[in-house]
Image 1 (cartoon, rainbow, N blue to C red):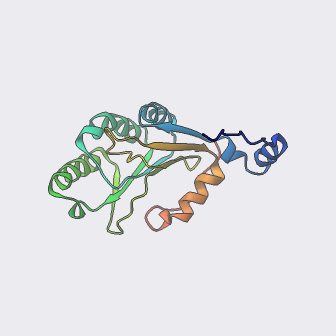
Image 2 (image 1 turned 30 degrees about the vertical axis):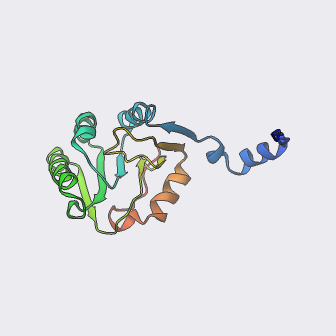
Image 3 (image 1 turned 90 degrees about the vertical axis):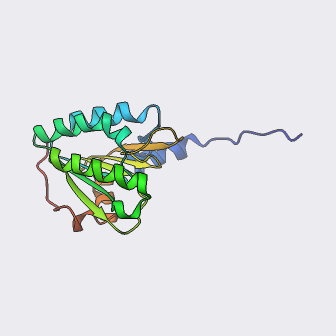
Amino acid sequence: MTNFVMPKINISAIAGLRQHSPELVASKLYNEHTFYKKFSQDLKKSRQEVIVESPYITSTRMYSLAPLFRSLVARKVKCYVITRDPIDHDLSMKQQAEKEIRKFQTIGVQVILTNEYSHRKLAIIDRKVLWEGSLNILSQTSSQEFMRRIENEKQAQDCFKFVKFGKFIYETRRPRS
């Protein structure tokens, strides 16, 4: 049996990373058990805009998220959901997605359907908080997943530009709050 030797950690290198990339060092990971509590808090604090990209939408998950989106729209927060066109899903997922997309539209959420077979899972809140990872935000029920939360305007803006959300959502300079 081989003994595992813990490598020495260069504390000054970590401090240097914090100086050059503090947004990455300051990020925090959440799993399928801890994500929705913090994500809900972020939604409740949002003031201008919420963007969620999730390839799947299920009725089970929407049961808990729909009231939050209703509240956002009532507070005049612009809400966008980017998801796959339901025609690209199997019958069960297609029916759920169609039903929940209609619910989003009734609430006042702008739904953007893509046929790019994107599998990204992310959210950008007020272009200041970025969530990214493996968890399908609008459909997760029982799988083991993770999401990374980065509270950094530059990182959120970089992601917005990188995934080309500007082709769906008007890019505007927001006043600082």
